[in-house]
Amino acid sequence: MYDVKVSDKAEKQLGKLPESISDRILATLERIRIRPYAHAKRLQGTAYFRFRCGEYRIIADIQDKQLIILVIELGHRKAIYK
Image (cartoon, rainbow, N blue to C red; front, side):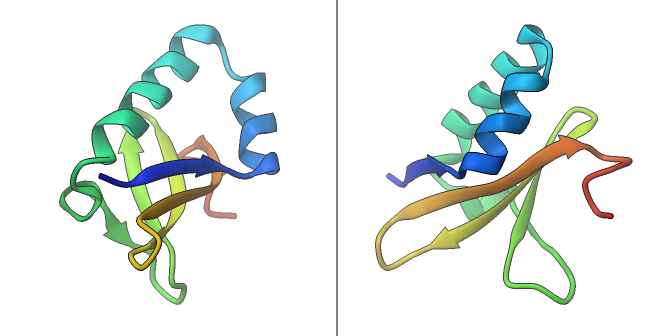
């Protein structure tokens, strides 16, 4: 099982969201710990992956050697890719 680590930027973004949405994102992160590649989609032009959580997206780096999912950024799907 992978460990989930959240960057400072993502922690700040998560704190700004309403509690219902942040709870949903945390539940999604807990679910993807078991098999992250089943839920991930690779972002074009980068080494990162995205995970869907309703209308929100989680941008993460999966480090297989250390079994870590590093959450880099999260936000609404309209603004996250800019």
